[in-house]
Amino acid sequence: MFLKQLLIFLFLFLCVSSYAEEQKKTRRPPREEWRAPRIDDRGKIYYHPGDIIFPADKDFLDLSRKERFRVLYKRRVSYDEYSDPKYAKPKYGSLYYEGNPLRPDPKIEKEIIAKLHLIRLFCDSFREKIPVATMQENAEMASALIADYLSEDEWGQARMEAEEFKLRSQNFTEAYITDQLRHRKNFYARRLRRIRDINNMTTLLSGSCDFVYLLIRAFPDDMDKAVELYEKSLIPQKTDFGKMSERYRREHTRKSKNIPPQYLDCYNAIREAETRRERERNAAK
Figure 1 (cartoon, rainbow, N blue to C red):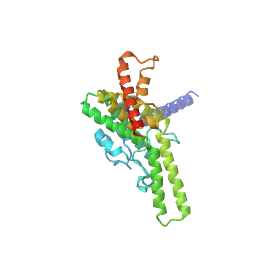
Figure 2 (figure 1 turned 135 degrees about the vertical axis):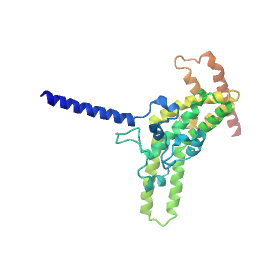
Figure 3 (figure 1 turned 90 degrees about the vertical axis):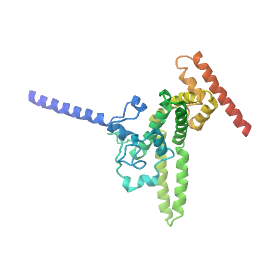
Figure 4 (figure 1 turned 90 degrees about the horizontal axis):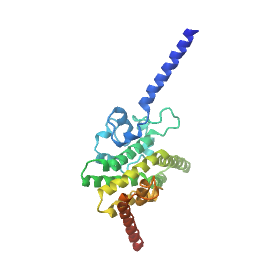
């Protein structure tokens, strides 16, 4: 009897140990690790945008941030690329929801994770000891990449229109065209759901806070430019994160209703810039 119990205990111990080791290999990197590029093999795979966008045999993190921006900016996986047989089994699969049958499709999710990670790196650069000119360049790229990320719905609609036109210009039956359009509509809707997924939007929300500080550090004497880039990012138009002044105020009123005196001058400068831009827009109508 004792021997039987011992064998059962050893079997359970081995199962638990094996499961723990597997989780170590596939777990999502801790949030604090998002602030810097990963250099181990798991990190290289995690932040690779997928072999549809970037060669699977090359390390995406070997590229500079500017080079990564050029790869990712306005680059999305289309339905035809997604359906291409040569990408049926992508090398860089889903590492962060392993074991979950409802995990996101890696051919979509990898692109999104890579783009969000680069946004975070740009926005977090205000903490780095870099020239102001570099910080301004990072702010420009962060604004453009955030706007690109938040423009998924317009892009999907444009793709649907272009693909329908292409299908109808060829000698296909109406039944085939209808079936194809249904598949494509579902695909672009699935992409949009992944973009707006609560976890991805929470990551963007966190990055938007750093984005505000980056803009302030990059343009300390030109708050109009800072507000312009914030608005160009489409954050006020496409999210409920608020205006730049609201985002700044929210970060400094967590423990009280009023902004601490040391932050009032900056807050007022942001408000004044927003008011000027609003006045100019109204005058132009």
